[in-house]
Length: 78
Image (cartoon, rainbow, N blue to C red; front, side):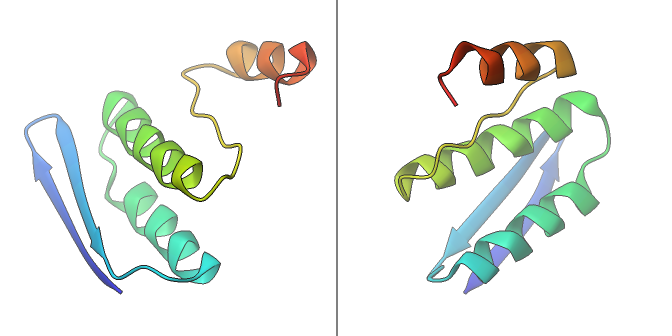
């Protein structure tokens, strides 16, 4: 796996190539969280992980608040 993290203003750019395992996805998530500098950047990173998960058929969602997350879980969509 090759991963590149780059902070571009308020955007955290994450480039991942040759990712094959769940462990590698976990490593990406940890690296993104460690590199995040504020809530907006962190949410953007979570949205990227959401996209990666969707590509693997995993139901993962990124929320900006606990209230939104709980509503989603309680809706049965989870």
